[in-house]
Amino acid sequence: MREHRRDFWSEFPKAFHFEAAGTDGFRFRPTGTYQPKPGSQNELLACIKGELHFDPQTYQVKSLQYEVLKDVAIPGRKLPKGAKYSVGMSKSAEGHYLPASLSFAAVHGKDHLTESIEYSNYRRFKVDSEIQFGDPPKVPEKF
Image 1 (cartoon, rainbow, N blue to C red):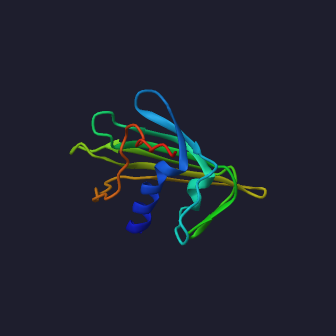
Image 2: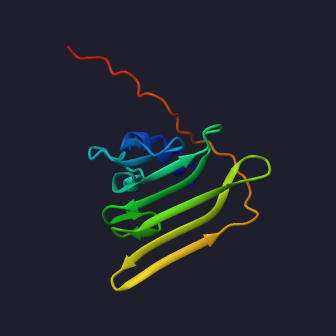
C-alpha cells in the first residue's frame, strides 16, 4: 500500500494541469496526455479532476476532493463516471493534519451509493510521499 501511495503522489504532478484556488489550494484537471507507467495502479490519475487545499505555513494537505470523469477500475473497486470523493483533515494538538472525514458518493444504475466515514483518535503515520510546489523545471530547447 505504501508503494502505491508513493507512486500515486510522485506521478500526480505529471498527470494534471493546475490552477490556483485561493491562496491555499489549487484545482487540477487531466493533461489529456498522461499515460500511467505499465503495471502501475495510477489509471485514476488520468480520470479525475478536483481541488486540493493545504496549510500555507506547513504545506500539509487540509482537504482533497475529486470527481471521476470516466469509468475506471482501481484495486478493489470500480469507480463510475460522476463518482465524487472527498477527504477532510483536522489539525491535531501536535500540529499535524490527520483525516477527520471521508465521503464517497456514486450512482450505480438506479442506486445512489453514499459512504461517509467520520474519524476520531486517528493516529499519525510517517508519510514518505511529497509534492513540491514551485515552477516546473526548465526544459532545454532542441535545435
